[in-house]
Image (cartoon, rainbow, N blue to C red; front, side, top):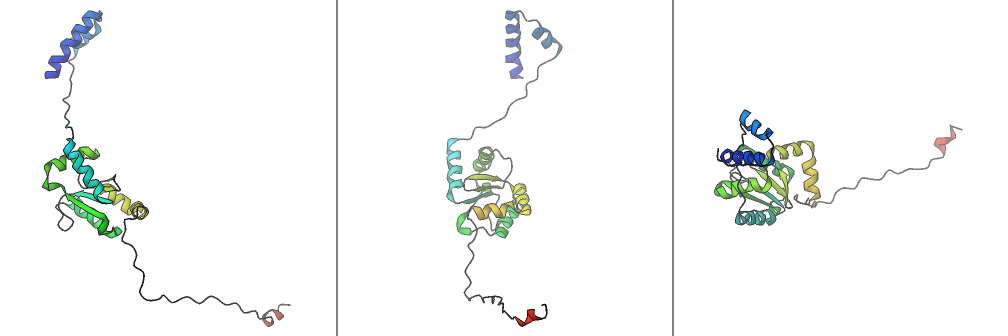
Length: 180
């Protein structure tokens, strides 16, 4: 309403000065509707805190709750997927967005992604639970995690592995004698 009050008279005056009557006739026939724009700028403190969190470990998950006690099904599913993939706990950090409303809202603006949980891999935003689920199902996630070297290293076996005997070929000329 305020925008209409400010802009419509300005458009009318501009069209009268330029001699353009189409704007005047347009404004009389139809009202211009301007939708209010709602946005919030991310504070520098919140941005710095999120940057620091994202840089803290190679794999960072912003979630509702903690890995031990997730507070929503999507956060629980994300933790389960990362566990199934074998992400190294020493290379993983989780942040509970329910503890800080500023973090929760700021994170959505930081990533331009509307939902929580959000996964970052080496400071790069990967996606939410739906993206993780899709990547897990089609094998992209395991490939990406392996390439980024964030999986638990395979332990060398303590027992020596039995070696398979090599096939030995024995030349026996008599086996060919009947063929000739």
